[in-house]
Length: 247
Image 1 (tube, rainbow, N blue to C red):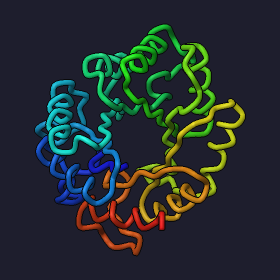
Image 2 (cartoon, rainbow, N blue to C red):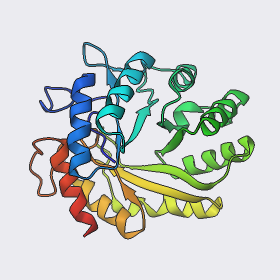
Image 3 (tube, rainbow, N blue to C red):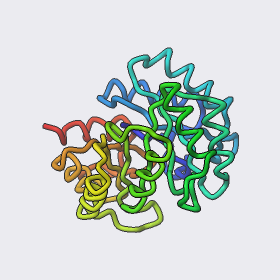
Image 4 (cartoon, helix red, strand yellow):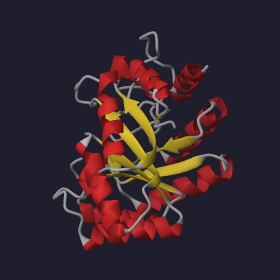
């Protein structure tokens, strides 16, 4: 999966961070051609700020589907300190996309799933939306397990993204992947999991994920760097480099 823009990188950080719908579509095509099977993208407003805008999401999904019909398309509900769980759920209901990422601790800050949480997860599942559950810490797996139990949803094939490190500077350590996997086993979850990591430690984490049987996400949302530490010219170059990790 490629995550080409995220909520925070701006043009001042790198001129190839895609901000508009057309830039996201062009980047998606280039990354698909470079080997990415899926794209996780954030919508931005005219000032470049992350927005949960159903109209922009639908526009991007429609255009991407025309250009890369075989690529899995994933929007985000990330709160970024701006949006409430209600706004996150509203976006999901308004768009009902092919794929959506949900930071479970953002959606359920009380860590006690409510009927509204259960309702949105069941609605998306019944509609065929593939939910990727973003887990920032191993204990988020416990919360996810609790939610799935209460919603009476299968734990087989659950799609998880383990966030190793943090954009703010928390070091991405490959050793931090195993605790997530241990939580999956503890909760009897046969999950399809992936990893994203940050900055110069990104590659070592991705290599460990592959070694442990996981999948990977790369792109400017997580790191602007190539494996050799140089700044990547664009997202598709990072995708090409990541593809070689499977050789």
